[in-house]
Amino acid sequence: QVQVVESGGGLVQPGGSLRLSCQASGRTFRISNIAWHRQAPGKERELVAGISSGGSTTYADTVKGRFTISRDNAKNTVYLQMNSLKPEDTAVYYCNAHISTNYRTTLWPWGQGTQVTVSS
Image 1 (cartoon, rainbow, N blue to C red):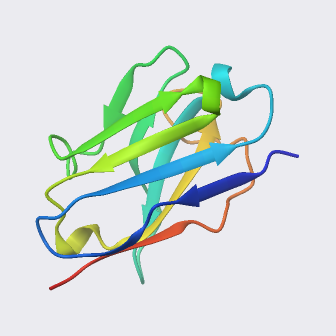
Image 2 (image 1 turned 180 degrees about the vertical axis):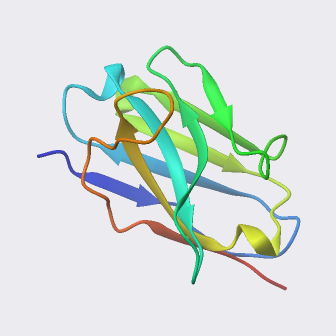
């Protein structure tokens, strides 16, 4: 079974930056479409950004121009660079692999996520 580890979260002031990492075991990583999702207290989990096996990216409107998703297949890792962070970005961030680039049906069990808190 694939094991997923998200890391890199923390407390940051508005306007600051963080870089999240998602590392997964398994040989299918390089052919997987992978996305970052987030869930804020009292809200449903939502898609933040996705990257296809071929490197095409998609972003939620709320993070376009501020977040960048990238992948390093040699390290089985996907990154999420988050700049110009806002208090509304506060959430637990998770990653998962998906069957298609609509990033709906997941392939991995959900990991524990990494907490991002944006506050002064």
